[in-house]
Amino acid sequence: MTIEEMFDTLGDDSEKRKRFFYELLLHDVYLLADSASGSKRITTGEHLQVFSMKYDAFEFVPIFLSLESMSRFLNNQGSPYVKANAADLFETLKERDLVINPGSEHALILFSAEIVDLLSKSLN
Image 1 (cartoon, rainbow, N blue to C red):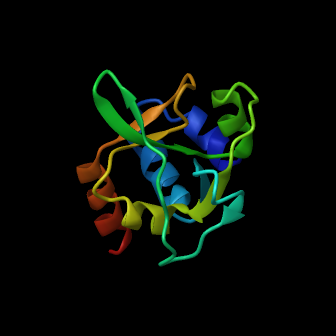
Image 2: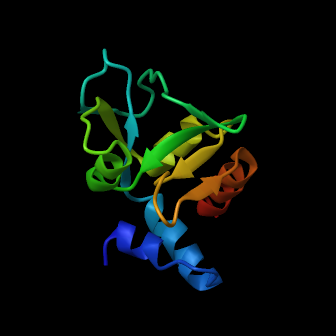
């Protein structure tokens, strides 16, 4: 089962959610980049200019579990992107709110406090 398939079947099952977040931290995710970045993989400690969005005064960083989900969000309009390990990215963006697969039926908001909690639990 892919990480995106796990995500799409989460529902309210706490065990599925726990397993998903554990797996997510081991996987790469995609995020939109500024045009100067091009499409590339970033490494830990690399400077990253983050693309954020606003919806009803809620500012968030959109992240995607696959290139396909990002493409659907962009209505197949190409855009520069970066690929990063989710745990490394969450550590870098832990003071920001994130939305996983925005625009999808199962979009999920991760508030900064939840990201910090998720990272601290992954270290135990």
